Length: 365
Ligand code: NAD
Image 1 (spheres, rainbow, N blue to C red):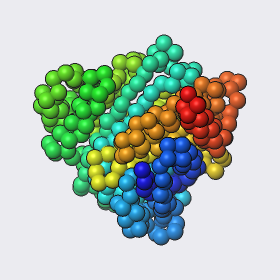
Image 2 (cartoon, protein in one colour):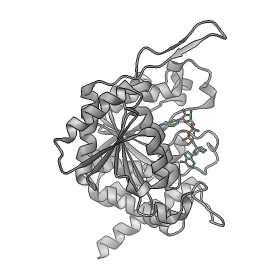
Image 3 (tube, helix red, strand yellow):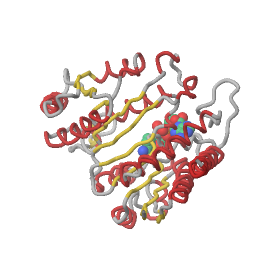
Image 4 (cartoon, rainbow, N blue to C red):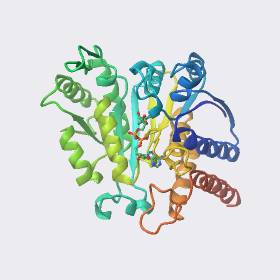
């Protein structure tokens, strides 16, 4: 199969982890006989520095003409003082909108060999397997009006949370469809005791659930869900929620399973689907060669599964990650106590080698 991808390394550790994910994709393509056709483009701070635009037109065009997009991360303190539309993050929000990527799937799985990397006790975390389904094009991040206005000392800031019924319904259906393939439980997270958006959300989600009678739907307020996520992470299956709640809860889920650096995501539903690790550009560790590339590598696995239906290839990457962790390889974020740590590239290299070994074993079998 011809795999035509646009690669957007972005900023900070985005470039470091994407490089490893591409090496893994290349290894899988070689092993399974696929052809990778890659074009690399700028986004975020890198694009601002080169073209004064966090999402240049040729980046959008390249993404729209590909079969899938793999992104690292955007964001840099160098642009923190820029106006909102001129910040790296604005490029990513625009890209999601341009692609029409309204459903963000964020799995958070506890790898057995990483049980001690979690700050939670082993008996709480063992077996945790959560799929967060985050609405990606609505809510506070996109709502209008938005502004900061007024005289210094008396300024007023406004953001608007908006949801309409069709956008709640389409994301709810993604969650229920996933629920059907998993443990048939969907938890919808809102703040219906305070917010009108959440009341509409709950009503529409409940209505949709009638079409999925075998899926058990429950509702929880976001504050309570945040607490339960650290108390009983194993009880969560599919978590359906709006944009900002999903942003926050998925980082929390990363902490619960051991590190944000492990989490992958797929942003689906639009013209071309977008895959990226959940973490940001991590300026505090950028350039040191210590970032965990596994979130980006597992995003590449999601890309193969969701955009190309290459289930065996996706599983091959996931098994190689699992095996690499079982062998004791740890980047600094995963290391505990006297664990020896490896660099970003050493971790990526080990996954590549494991992919190749698994293929060889299969051929010999
Ligand atoms: P962050 O995710 O970049 O980092 C949070 C913490 O997790 C940091 O201590 C970092 O070192 C650590 N971390 C993150 N990824 C890691 C990895 N792969 N390996 C090891 N450790 C890792 O979040 P932040 O610090 O709040 O934001 C930094 C910048 O990234 C900001 O400009 C922010 O706007 C941007 N950001 C971008 C995205 C994105 O591109 N999707 C997401 C979140 C934040």
